[in-house]
Image 1: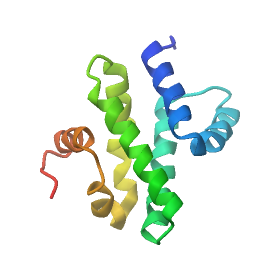
Image 2: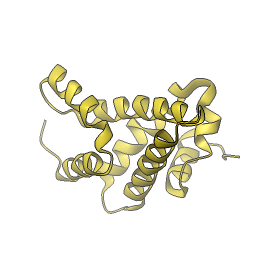
Image 3: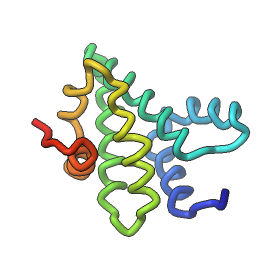
Image 4: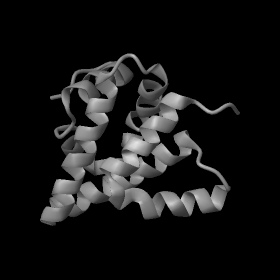
Length: 128
């Protein structure tokens, strides 16, 4: 599969903006033998859901981390000149948020405007 410069730049920016995720990502790269961006974003989604759950339980560091990660994703989605990044966030992050189960509605309330719009398109509904 050819390398995508947009996706590579996004992944590098993700690790720079959310370095707390790096050890989880390194385990995945070790397991697969390479970095697979869509798989990585699925893992990031599960990691972020758990971070949200810690934040809800009162962990202030987790709350800051959760908010920083969502702000990063929202900013990345805003840049419409990078369709590969928009697809990566939409297909491998937003479409996997259902994994939050009963925490999904609470998590949705924290999404930035660009994430909300894209999720509404995906769901075909409006967020409350």
